[in-house]
Image (tube, rainbow, N blue to C red):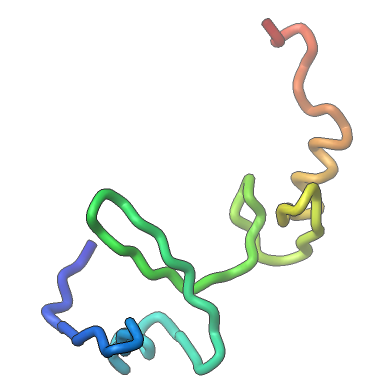
Length: 88
């Protein structure tokens, strides 16, 4: 993680403004969704993008059991890509 040295106060509604320099760098536009993650005592903000839960691809996504996966990973799952001889 990089320390930008930029700080912003939390307002009375709990809002924090993301500085324009960071928004521009990460190509965050008005109405983009931001994902909130926590790690220990850290809050991590990430631009939310739909992506395959297996390979991270962001195109040709389909819904599979309430998750997004790409067509390639779906075909691998559907085709039973695990060799039965390798299973315990």
